[in-house]
Image (cartoon, rainbow, N blue to C red; front, side):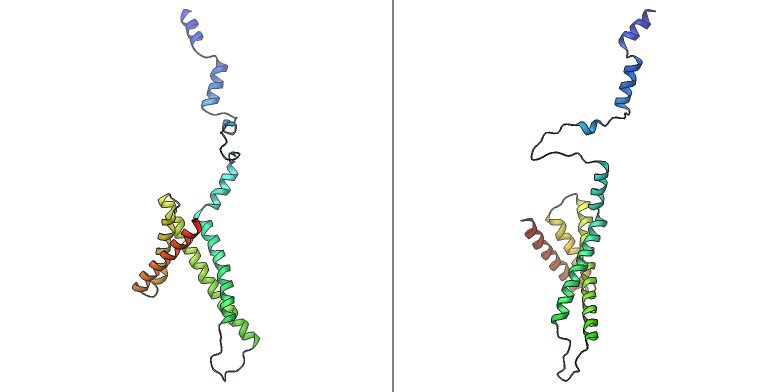
Length: 184
């Protein structure tokens, strides 16, 4: 009898034990939402699970590469249209006058050619840069430089080893200059 009195006065009641188990093991309350975080610059907002999922999709390498490809396609189409409208297609003085259909066909070919090339370069550069950034765990100027070197090297390798090296150095220098300009 005396042992049961000692145990009941030292231990927890079943109701208290149940509330402790719910608190430590699992509960239906979200204590995380009631955390008080001191304000430094502005209001602090704790993100919901849906916001975190959307943010994860937007920050993924696949999404960044897709956006870079689409934007590159648009920029390439604009530059291709401009360059096709400026470049002379008739070289001989006695060549026959081009019809509107031939002019529009040349515009379409040039626009699509530029668009595909810019989309490919944007996709390649963005994918390589995001992969390097994910691997290094840092978001600094070196990622763009490395990505520019790899992208320029791969593009230049189609013409040979020496153009690949020149392309890597040139694209890396250009990426570094653009990154420096954008960050400062």
